Image 1 (cartoon, rainbow over the protein chains, first blue to last red):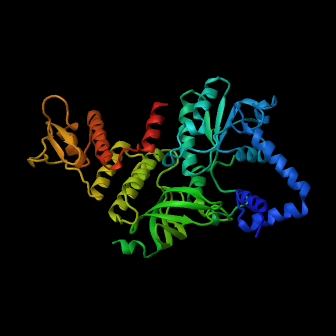
Image 2: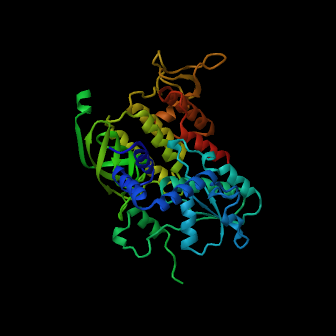
Image 3: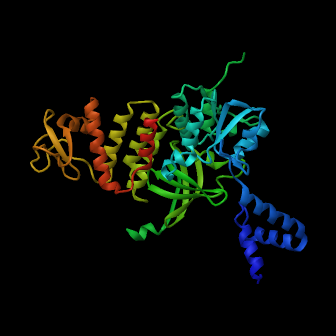
Length: 198
Length: 244
């Protein structure tokens, strides 16, 4: 039998992805038995983040400031806008590429069968941003899923109507991969989108 | 037969399409599937969103698949998936119409009722949309065949009641669930359509702009009877896109 407080902690830890009852129990006992300071730090960090982190006014990513670090930066190209589905995608692009423009984070994708329409992913806000005249080019980096493609298609229409150049990130064979293991849709896309060797 | 419904289901590499999927727990997917021989089914794809060879990449809508499953009751377990060809709808267009087809199938087919003919029609419809064939005509044809398949086929070539053949030049009031009656004076009691629109719908013929509008209104009214009050989300999105 666990005491009510320990039971509560175990239950609370289970909200984390990939954490089942067994690992939640291990985490709870580890924190209480061996790492009191770490536990306190975790509690404080969690509380502060949950209290203060909201959405950036401009790009909608998670941020405790009105403008996130990317949007507030003076060094980035403000005319270039990359549209992604989630804050994790922003991190992936920042860490993995030398992209120097701005972002817009949809916090999801269009999914008509789930009732997720344009407002739910902030497309009215994106329209306002596109109308501001600041944006010179838009790059669509939604996921290469059916819903991600539909979302890209929908936004592309919005952008084209404002006579702003718009492109979709390329689809193809992952670097370091083997053709044999690439799924057929990706392979078809990769062949269709082949590039001349200069 | 309700006894058969609760018995053990199993299938090995059966032709199927994913109609819809959503994340389930940390690594799994809940799939709504349309299979050729067992109709619409709910499947759980355990662990589909993790691992090196991610199953989720294959389990996309609009791509022909061979699926295996097993289980009991409403929700079965996916045990295998193989692609059976490239996606029929290219990413550049037709996706919104594709969502519409999928939503219709989810709303109008009962789980576990086989519709092999409709499955073939669905596959053919996706292929036509993918090739950029006249979208409206393709959708009208699918709607007509879907209604027919679920037992509510439209009477298009003969008048309701009298059974007299529909005349191309004549104006009719189409009464959903009954059929066309010659249009009377004043307000239409159903959907007002020309005879030639009804005949073109019945025979997959060409329609002019007015005929297309009539056909669309007619199909919408005919489907509404079976869809109930809840609006179709994909139709709303389609409409919004056209208004951009």
